[in-house]
Amino acid sequence: MTEPKLEALEERIGYRFQNRYLLDCALTHTSFANEQKIHTLQDYERIEFLGDAVLEMVSSEFLYRAYPDKKEGELTKLRASLVCEPALAYCARDLSLGEFIRLGKGEEASGGREKASIISDVMEALIGAMYLDSGTVEAPRRFIMSFILSDLEDKQLFYDSKSILQERAQQAGQDVRYELLSESGPGHLKHFCVAAVVDGQKRGVGEGRSKKAAEQQAAYAALRGMSAGEGRTVKNCI
Image 1: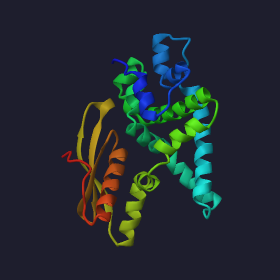
Image 2: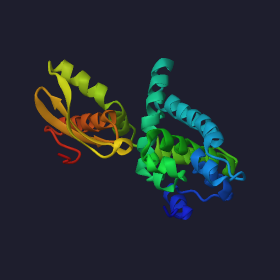
Image 3: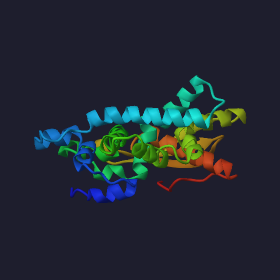
C-alpha cells in the first residue's frame, strides 16, 4: 500500500510538525517496525502512553468547567465514556486516521486499519506527538477540543446508544432486540449488518466489523429516528 503524504494529515488536524520524526513514530505500529527492522524509529506505544495522560488531563479540565454541578463520580463516568477505546476509534475514523498508519503485512491483512484497538491508540499517540513537538499542552488541547470533545451531545448519544435505547424502551413498556440481517467477508474481515427491533418494528440498521459495533450503530440510528418521530436506517445493507 502506498503511504499517503503526511502533509494531508497535518492539514486535516490543523497542526504542522516541526519534528516530523515524532509524527512518523505516532503512526508506526509495532508490526511495521519489527518487520522492516527499523531500529531508528520507535513504534507508537511510548508516545501513546504520554498522549493518554494529556488527553485525560485536558478532558478532565473541560468536564470540570463545563459541568460545575456534577459530582466526581459523574464526571469520572462521563470522561470514561468520552475517551474510551470505541469513542476514540469513532473520532479517528472521522479523520480517516487509519489510512496513515504504518502496519506490517500480517496486521494489514487482518484489517488492522479498522481495528478500534489500533486506531484509538494512534489517536492518543498523535496527541502525545503534538505535545512533544510543541512543548506545550495548547496544540493538543486544540486538537482534543476540535476532534474529540466537540459535538458532545451527539457523540454521547452514539457512545451510549444501546443503553439509552434499552432504557427508553423499558420506560415505554417495549422490548428491544437485535436481528442479524447479513454477515459477509472472510474470518479476519467480517462485516455484519444488524437491525435494532423495538417492540417488533425495525427502527434502525447498522453495520460494523463486529456484531457489537453493528448493534451500536443500529441503536444510534433507532434513537435518531425516534427523536425525529420515525424509524430510520444508517444504510441499507440487506
